[in-house]
Image (cartoon, one colour):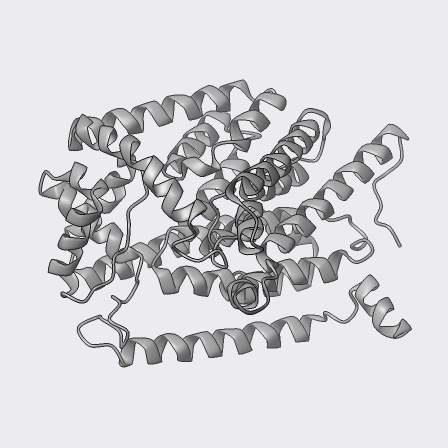
Length: 417
């Protein structure tokens, strides 16, 4: 037992050869599952009557309706579902569209393509963007540490949330890439960073922490650039698809909130938030909102403090990404893609010597958690994804506190033994 504890503490169990083996096994299993899923489908509809890409079918349908001049109908569940069944067959289950009309700027061009090509282009291009961003974040670490340089691409590709996002045809790659790219650009290109933050506004549930962190960090140009970008996107979508689309979106948010969050129509095990955990454990809606509010306030306060007083940009970036997920009640399992750039920033900020106590083991837990989060929650009511978010936030805060204390003492930053 003492040996196991020491291995977990030092991280010596996670050798480069084991990392490579674990990633290759995951990729092989995922590849077989995806090939089998597609091979057993007929006309891009699987054996359960679901379109290949599942959630992407709602993007494609929304884009088609927008091109037909019916953007507002996307927010009418009956009309949206009717169009889905026209496109994918009469037995197609309903896949809702919860995004603001600015996301039509992405969905409409995709709907010009045949469905299979649109899905491949959507996932392929956003996945490539994600890999470029992860590689950019890790560039300093790749140059300094041979193992990271050799393994980063494999680890990024095999990150379990990748497979979840692929299965759903979702926007996790894009969200992770935009947030990571914005934080890479922020120190030298704040206006560009602001634009990238603004492009993330198709996920309004992630809007709580980012502007407050920018204000706390006195990143005025990025803050105003982000705000202007959001306004431009809203104006462009209103001009192209009609102001009635925005009216319909705003009117639909109450129904969406009740169905998705409060009633858990997608399953509380799929949601990765404090709110969902309380509801999954049998708590009432009021209790869930109170718990989520407490976690959100503490998370925002910690992020604001680090962004105001912290010195290491990579640590601030890792914290901001983790806090963005943790502060929102609406985080689905494919949104755990956000952990990829967060992990990359943390690794990029590592000391020149070695990681601190338990850091490697905790990073491994956070990395693997998306693979098991939904299934474990479904059978045991243990919200593994939420625990991974909390563990990572604590890890980054610990590093921020140690860095601040080290700087206050005028000593070089070192890892704990």
